[in-house]
Length: 116
Image 1 (cartoon, rainbow, N blue to C red):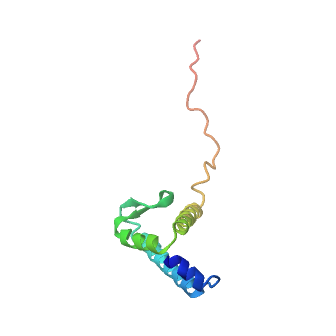
Image 2 (cartoon, one colour; image 1 turned 60 degrees about the vertical axis):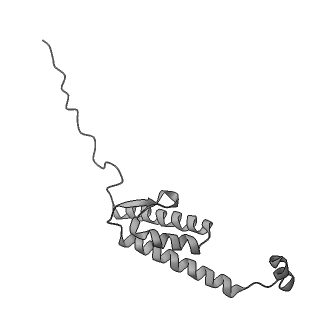
Image 3 (cartoon, rainbow, N blue to C red; image 1 turned 120 degrees about the vertical axis):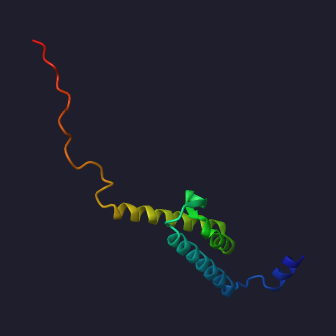
């Protein structure tokens, strides 16, 4: 009943200030969570987020705020983006270590025995 009454009063009105405030709250919660993840990265990571992302238990409260303030699809998107950026940064920071062998294969160490 309340939903129908609201729709009858404001059928085409979009409250952009409400949408903007919710988006800003989501971004703030997201930034707080990922700042915590970066700060606590040296600790054992025991909690699981979406996309297989692990984070420390100390960040559990900020994760709950992040999930509370953001839509589920946004949370999944931000987690995927964070994981992609972290793996890309790791690949770029490793420089040549992830490219495979750069030297030619070594000669055989097995020497056939000759029987005369």
